[in-house]
Length: 278
Ligand SMILES: Nc1ncnc2c1ncn2[C@@H]1O[C@H](COP(=O)(O)OP(=O)(O)OP(=O)(O)O)[C@@H](O)[C@H]1O
Image (cartoon, rainbow, N blue to C red; front, side):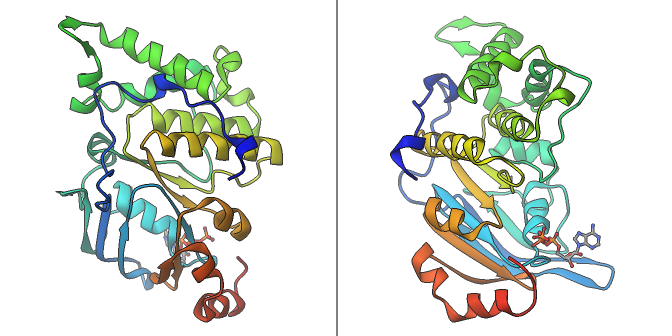
């Protein structure tokens, strides 16, 4: 990422009691043999993958299985076979709130905000839905118990400032532009205090200025110890902004590696030229 896109990191985004793990280089995610079928369609055909700290791009032609993998990792679909470990914890088959409590959340291609509620109310809902130890710890400052709702409200405001949507807090979420909805979606994910966020095409349909803003925020969050797995169809954007790239094809991992290596891999070129658009 270019320096001009780098925002000032906002300390308030990083919870005081939740050190981001991964400095020692251990993988965040270990995915072993994940399969998923829909009727006669094999969407995932034995996905093996480790995801390291930082920002990892996930690419592949249409129908490669990227979104289905996100769904299987975050509990929205139950895999038919295989295991998923988040750090040392086996999270296979758990429900989304339980996986969020363990430290992994996802955003959706089509943001899922509640249109009739305000932006602020939408932000408050995210952690309220994720009651658990991870957030509860943040409510204790020293020996003093701070009322949970006030802490959540404060963090919601901090994160809104960080994503520059604080001027919209009282607006109905349904009145936001497409790009602002994407910012709200990521902000909501951050409020659950994750270690890793799975972003499903967060930049699709976003204008270039906002795109750079979102990328800048992600970069700042990575510096703060958060990790991201990012589905994106704009290959140049993935190559410019990701430390590692995973390529999926026909329900399996075709290859992983540094952007330059992946870009020049004949199998990757063939997969994309083989029919589908990027
Ligand atoms: N709920 C579902 N029911 C039936 N088939 C599904 C379902 N979800 C996904 N599929 C099928 O599984 C395969 C993988 O789809 P998936 O959406 O995971 O691919 P993708 O790589 O995310 O594609 P795209 O880049 O177009 O979003 C496709 O053949 C798709 O039609």
